Amino acid sequence: MSNPKLRSQLLYLGKEYPKGYTYFRDRCKTAFMKNKDITDEEEIKMLIARGKFVEKELEALYMLRKYRTLKKRYYE
Image (cartoon, rainbow, N blue to C red; front, side, top):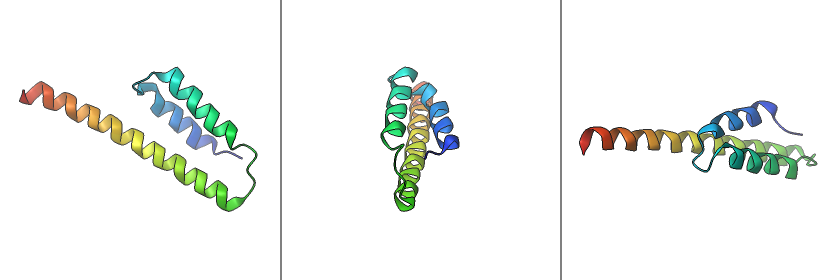
């Protein structure tokens, strides 16, 4: 069981991934396929929480990159 909204959100965020979209897409697909047979409800909730954590980390990565670009542009 997977969360299609989470997967699509991760794929959307992966478009700007530093190593490229195809790298991110393949890693994301591998992670979801590895856990496709899990049926334990608690474990599914844990995996969804991990996915949301990854989503927040990607957003933080992009914000940091944006901040560094602006800082370099205006303060150096």
